[in-house]
Image (cartoon, rainbow, N blue to C red; front, side, top):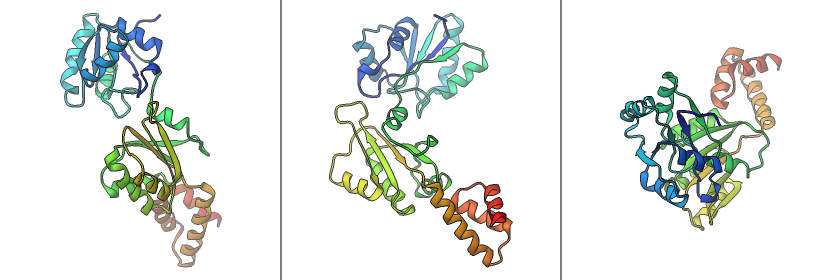
Length: 270
């Protein structure tokens, strides 16, 4: 098996049985495991009888740890990076370190494994494969609405905390006309559930049911045919008001999050 200096290793998002044999092998063979919270990682290591030494690596010490890891690697030691759960660099620390190690030509590889986004999407039937991953949504109502506008026709996948989810769903419901959404919580765990319905029904559901655990959500993209019909209707109205093709393309691209050049061509074709 080819050897690397640095390994990015996914860990289970809930069910410990989801760890891969290769992940166990790598975590046992490296000299150091860089982890977010040593208490969380130690539970996994104890379960699989892994004795490798851990060093903390989290968003508050990312930059200061770089030289320490470089020194260890230059001394011939192997390092594995893990997050508390799932695949590192998905809303977890690691980007700064990986970027720096690549600049210094260290050999890096990533193992396949548990990931909340992939696990969630594999249970959600979608009209199209494209999606935008927003990570944790911003707290600001204006920022959330900006994302909803920009990716109107695209499925938007996001992480959210239980205490903020209801407010987020209310913002989504008010900004769009009762869109279809899906909320997954406690994926791979005993109380896993995925609720897919129009936004108002999902809000009502969680008003009457427990809302705990790790959450992944999706706002389904609006039907492109319906959007095109709505665009054509708006183009006709603006042309009747004597707006130029350029002005119409600017206005509608802002309102619908559409490509300005595509809208411009559409204006000329009508």
